[in-house]
Length: 124
Image (cartoon, rainbow, N blue to C red; front, side, top):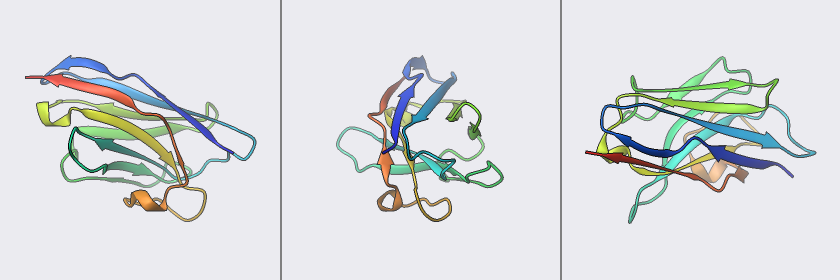
């Protein structure tokens, strides 16, 4: 099994920055492709960003491109999401996910392990 724990969420003013972290653990963990997703109240969970197992390839949703940066440190078993220029509409619970097979993907149904989520609230 693989456990994922997100941290770094909080309340921030519009235009501000936050960095989320996702720490992985578990006997079956290896540097899987990882993704960040988010879910706002009353909306479906949506793709935010993904990164390949070695960090060499990344993919972003159009809504965050140029503002968010996904990265990873495999020695620390941690994936990061640096968020800048936050907007009110970025308010959501942010989840990290690991995909045990295949490459990076924007499709949530292709991810095998999920964290509990961390709340990001952007005040306007």
